[in-house]
Length: 211
Length: 211
DNA sequence: TAGATTGTTAATCGATTAACAATC
DNA sequence: TAGATTGTTAATCGATTAACAATC
Image (cartoon, rainbow over all chains, first blue to last red; front, side, top):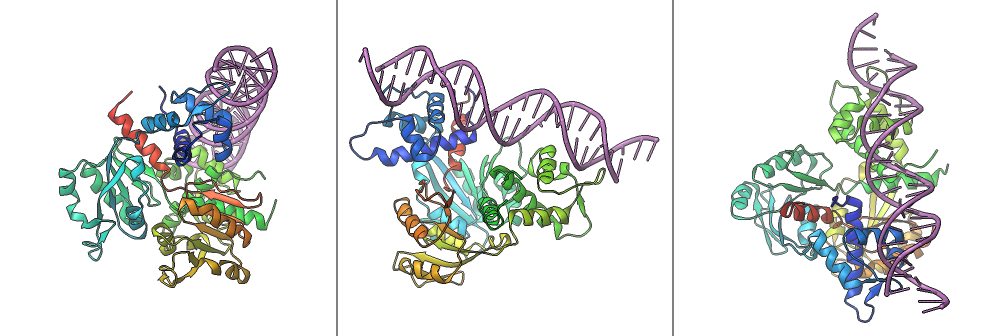
């Protein structure tokens, strides 16, 4: 089976979140592609294709079983696997990510946080003690870390990525606005927080000076 | 001229950030599309097309003028306009966004922060006093706010979006994993922080069980 | 002049949307 | 049966990549 594209994966996650919130309620057991589509501003045909792609089959005149959609999405995306993650860089953003409770429902648990700033080291955020960077390699030896969340300043990001890779990390979620040089086997997902401002700024400008 | 697409805008922003960092240095005044492309893992043809689309012309055998690229991107995306932004919801994420100094270089200044939690109100983050939600409408009357950054829990997001719209906001940067219902004239840019986890989780799963 | 790089057209690729027969 | 919804094929659309003449 051809791997799912990034946009398809994000749509699946949105279906999941939308239906999971709805799921807890009582009666409605089914949902149509049109309903999902309308709620999320996605074409109904697209919804049906996405569900077909992961093997969810619907019922004519009825729609799809909500529980089944959620279950299959969770299985396909791997939300039921338990993953250990670490955070490197406990500044404002890193601290916020550490305190954020929302990753757990996708199977990710943050097991450690590291920072080079001596003033941060030893403090505790969300029951997680901040450790010095130098303890990274020993820590990795005794833990099976699947993901490193890198939230350090741009200048430091490459250096720390190198360290992470050397310590055995092969998946990095990078919040610095820098493309990291890493070996082939390492997967880097960039998520620079400012990127959406490009569209926001552009639209504000256009409103000022319409074509 | 046809409006630029979201992906094109994000590429332009990446060119800008990459060259701006480089720009401060000394000698190199020119850059080729291939150089930019290699640095950012983007096809050289794509770079040339993007630059052509905003009216930057290069020189055969030489390349493009770095300063001109930056200048034209800034002008096109509106980074030189001054925009006032407010943050609604000063939890971990909202607080991090408030403290983040990086929006200024795109022309955005955060002029106020609001929260419904009485314990937050009155505290000061990054020289910005946190105000009670009820002061939102009066504040808007005396300020020209271009952007509201919405960083509240999912359950509260629609209610606060309604309030923002009523107070006159017409651009919202929404960090809650919820599609907001807003009038036609309001632009909402969603940026749910967890979305990239769909791809990360999927790839981790596939590594465990390769096709 | 020779050679590298732009600018642009054509080809490819993939994603989205429209249409509609099959199904319940 | 009638009507709504799925599942799937075809058409459209847009984005990316390849090719190459024009340019410096």
